[in-house]
Length: 503
Ligand SMILES: Cc1cc2nc3c(=O)[nH]c(=O)nc-3n(C[C@H](O)[C@H](O)[C@H](O)COP(=O)(O)O)c2cc1C
Image 1 (cartoon, helix red, strand yellow):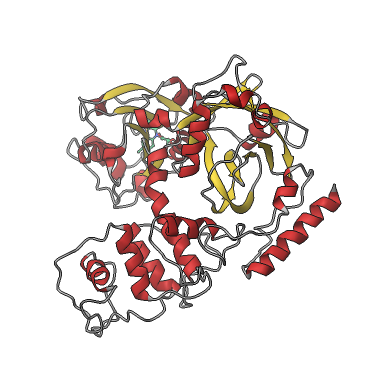
Image 2 (cartoon, rainbow, N blue to C red):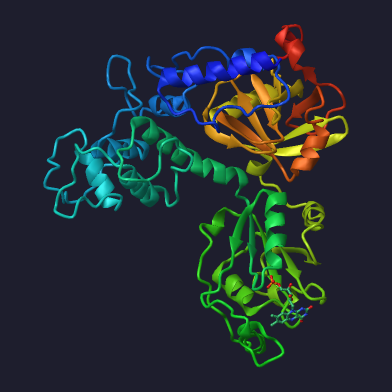
């Protein structure tokens, strides 16, 4: 067994040398307890993928190159080559973003002396300047033919996406080194996946204020349990210890006693519209919510949303009656006081939070004997194919340990891959090489496709239910909830016996 594993490691390293890409220890599977039938697949020689002859299937950028090619964002450099290690010019990057934006034609005075009209990149630069994505060198030049540095690429994407998209890209440190075509493709794909990730997990907002840190872990647990987004209500003027010393004439006391006090908030929820549910957390101050929570509720219109408040306190009970008038058109669920985070998951589950059509479509179920988990699905072409597969009925996969960090099993068919370099974490469900599904109870960095993540389950619970390191388990994946045993076994499916019964 061990020999096969070392053979795999050797092959992986040879593959890395062949592709001239960095092969860090983190990219190779860690030494682990078992090796299964998938080892054979993992030792296969790299094969070129998609339209390009110079991209091995296991290159970290293979998925990104495929993405930018299929979406007509980046062409090759000719003769079937993508030239992943070559540099990208500033004009090229701007043109890629312009294509991704749908090639908008804007009426904007060209400000750069070195960008004449009629060039293949002229309209792209005009658009990027109008969007304030690029400002040129400050001397009236844009430098269209200059290689774009990692620093510049980061800055442009920061303006474009309003958040970083280059994290985890191999060799990318944001320095003045030129960015490669492979790195640019990865950044473009990361950006393209941002809104989809938000849509998958962004229906619930957990907004909280915590002056001394007790409410924070409760809010974090609620976020984990719901798969929602966490937002800390940050006071514009932070509370000092003296401000909170309630046995004196302190600022917090003065605010609580002043009906008009509305302490300013330093930050804002981005696009409150997309949330259907708001879980609102705070400490109890003199029996009530701090006035900054009033500021929060006055700032946003939460009509039509579902709100559930939660609090921590030194002993006083929960209170949200003074808040409900701010949002008379919201549905307020029963709130609760917590003395720690351990009961939060039960509370959240008991709230029976409304599911939107989208949220339901993003879910699937996993069943191992009597254990049933839900998982939030990602939004990518592989997940669409996976959903089509499960739409035909529940699928049971026999899974075995691999590498000390995952259970893996063949799914009896091959689905399209949306590979990218990711670090899979406990609870992640991964499509591996298109024909296997894995459930992670440990961590590993590799180039593969995340299908989704199991909701609100701890690593310890995963390890126990999956019998981590302890042999085979059968996991039934379904879209419609626990199955009474009518699932198709992937192994039968593979043998094409049951497959024919599936329409
Ligand atoms: C100004 C002030 C007033 C407070 N009033 C109460 C109260 O009426 N009842 C209570 O049980 N705890 C009270 N507390 C204690 C907090 O509710 C408790 O420590 C809470 O967990 C703090 O949460 P945080 O660390 O997230 O800010 C008060 C604390 C402060 C600073």
